[in-house]
Image (cartoon, rainbow over all chains, first blue to last red; front, side, top):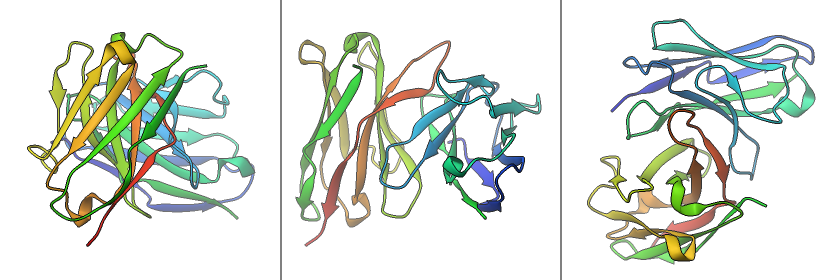
Amino acid sequence: DIQMTQSPSTLSASVGDRVTITCRASQSITAWLAWYQQKPGKAPKLLIYKVSALESGVPSRFSGSGSGSGTEFTLTISSLQPDDSAIYYCQQYSTHLYTFGQGTKLEIK
Amino acid sequence: EVQLVESGGGLVQPGGSLRLSCAASGFTFSTYDMHWVRQRIGKGLEWVSAIGAAGDTYYPVSVKGRFTISRENAKNSLFLEMNNVRVGDTAVYYCARDRGYPIGGLDVWGQGTTVTVSS
């Protein structure tokens, strides 16, 4: 199975900061990567698909990118807002056996 | 409104069985791949199973041979049959819609149903 590793596990930042979360795949997943946001007691919400495509309705301060190797990806929040406090997960769908990263908890200082 | 609503969760003893259901509405259910994803309390998301629009099924090693995903397109319903359950299967179970190739991403999720495995 493809393993997905996120870093950091927790992140504390201030409103207005630029925040970056990294996700690494154990093997190339080409561009089959999504990012989700989950708030307490709620279902996950799709933010980004195919590495960098912004889901409809998601604020443009969210963006995704990849290194080109097919194994390293980043989620960036350009200007952190209070509503962005949540846990963020990456997920690969390169094979039929989907896997998620372990999550990054983002806290607002 | 596009919606998924899970049901069927509850308390089950180790070694027992449980059947989860997911009712879909607001979209053409039969044309989408569908998934179950679970989340243990305080833990991350874990993919549990998938079923393609054509009925092909997929499972991770952790549940293969114990869980069975199925669908009934005429009733816009997705199911997860859980057999020989373990304490470690205790979690909130979500069903989710997959937009499939060439886009991908699980874009619609239910609210979740809680399964507790305990004696």
